[in-house]
Image (cartoon, rainbow, N blue to C red):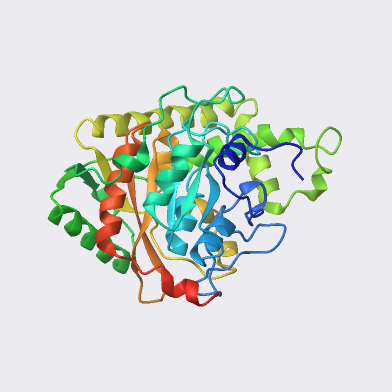
Length: 373
């Protein structure tokens, strides 16, 4: 039981929100399927033999099944957008520092971003407007004005949208069909589609793996059963693996070879996005390379989360905002997600682009909810 409320919880309550309860997630947010949860996995509402994604899987499931209109997730490298894509809902990762992290158990302190998981883009804009803003309790929170996201949502703005083929490699053929249909819709709406070149997303995997593990090792060191929490024997295997790898990366003799080099590459990723955003307003890409995997499949991959999050990790590394919206259904009966990325603190462009595409894709959200009425 938390001894105090998070800043975003307080902000939502002050605006009349009712907090229904806690949703399931991977323990310590270590995972991309909710299968590492201490309470058992969540199940995909479209097909219960499949996972909903993670780590914020319980939040995505609760929204997708219509149990609640909106939920909060946290993202370090895809933990909002991945479950949103796999569960057929909207997931928004704000710019790093746009929303206070106070009250959230730290995993990767330089990556963590709380954000909304909702049924519509308009709901995501509404929640972000309430949640965003400077917080004296969080030194990483940005002191910048919060735009009126909702009122600006339907502005008839034509955007320049970047398409990078680097994000199309090894993506499922049916996902690519939905992505191409979405690009055509955006073009028909009057937006300018422009081919751009970005660093290959695969480089973000190594950066995330090393830096996130290092920050995990540092953040979880306090949970030793003496000052905080239970003894370390209560950590699950995934948490143990991440602590060990992070401790190794930070150890004498390896710091320069691994941690320091990863920080340099992270800077290059951020610089690469900054250069591209001088040419386009937003970037559009698939959210995930495949649709949801079956329960148990995560144990078949040594770095399951990194492989599933390969297309979401670069935006997280750069600290820029990104949103996933449902753009179609796969022949396997599972949802397909597409994502927009925008320049740092430019959530307006992100939401406007997502809103316009959402209105024209006309994804059916109601039929899955009727299964759970």
